[in-house]
Length: 142
Image 1 (cartoon, rainbow, N blue to C red):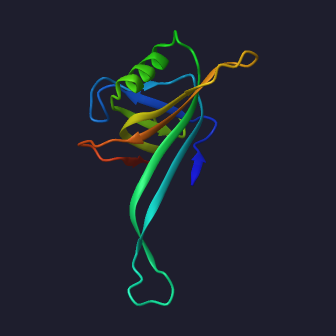
Image 2 (tube, rainbow, N blue to C red):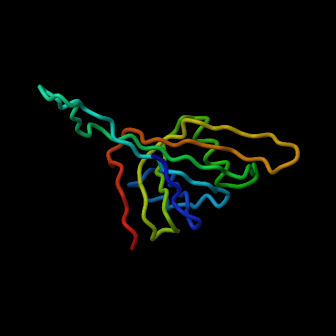
């Protein structure tokens, strides 16, 4: 189930991953940030009359709409990472730096640009976790 992380929500990235030292950058053109987390089911029925399930593994994704700005440093960094298939550290938080949300190393798997003539141009992205020495983690608000 997806949930929007709020009006003050931010999408941050760090080029050298969650455990890196490059420093977090906020994507100021990001809006409509949605975090989706879902448990896969494992059948634990054995000889039950009713299916009984246990959570098996969690899938996580972050979707965001960016205002397309090819001159914006952060937009270009995300676009370059997408084109190269490079992983980065990501945070999808309810508010800047102290908000609650997921922190993980991930890769941008989807990049969809709209080329509207009447409205502002936007880019929709989907980010999913990638193998890393730092496991995805929930950051509580501080």
